[in-house]
Length: 305
Ligand SMILES: NC(=O)c1ccc[n+]([C@@H]2O[C@H](COP(=O)([O-])OP(=O)(O)OC[C@H]3O[C@@H](n4cnc5c(N)ncnc54)[C@H](OP(=O)(O)O)[C@@H]3O)[C@@H](O)[C@H]2O)c1
Image 1: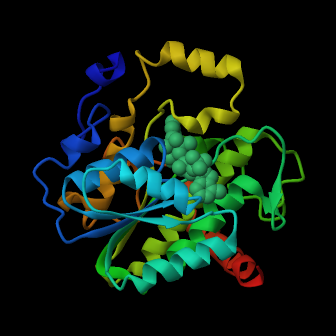
Image 2: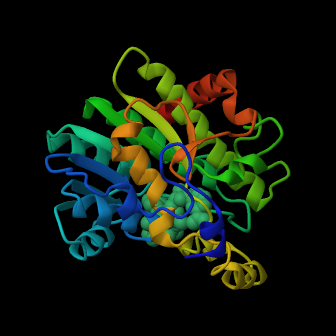
């Protein structure tokens, strides 16, 4: 356990910085539940899938290719169903929606976990900055496409990040969605993560009057493959800091799993969660008019591709 985990206490949920995904699900029987998770083949997604299956859920594990999803699922003890979902390819995401819909099972939770971070050079997909497209638009197509499959009390969990605080001053640069103006890797990653947060808040607003909930999660800072585009100096600094400050992967997977299945999170909605508790986001991350505008432009984009 890291020094930080030892010093940090637990929050009102009874869990905190040091809690692991196994601990936040201890005693839960998820038999009969179907849960979809993206990015199931690596880091937090793989650990979340392992623990959800351990508790009896059938996990629909999505990865960029069926081979990757199948390999990840094959390593799990419990019930899993591998599916392909390349978030940068709308046809692949739509095919995933169809495959999951055809399973004809109610989804108790959708965990939008996959993501890319801090691409060194500006890149675009379908005219949008690549991180914004993969992290936000790919999941927008997936989650909105699966609304008919989401259980009446189903939960949507969006992986955001504390890095959303590094988004542009306006939150989302609606006049620079291609990212051509003033690209920096962290600002664009931050923008994609504030998009995940605003999507969760707007979805939660749309769920009002139902038993469905939607939340966004900061999992902590964890050394995973996410850092593949980081410069070696930063990676070196992180590996030195690891035993002191960083969360382990089992700790990092805790908040998304808590949000997806813990009974205490069943009525929590429209929140930004950290260390398995409600936390405070940036002011821009609370801007519901920006959330509505982002939904509108995303919907228009998705209709055009
Ligand atoms: N680790 C942290 O410190 C941290 C902090 C804050 C937030 N987060 C968030 O936590 C989530 C999980 O990250 P992680 O740390 O577990 O990273 P990771 O180990 O790199 O896992 C990311 C997953 O996303 C998948 N992915 C990437 N691009 C994709 C695409 N175009 N289509 C479909 N899947 C794609 C990856 O697949 P491949 O393996 O095939 O590339 C991988 O399975 C991310 O959303 C990240 O932003 C992480």
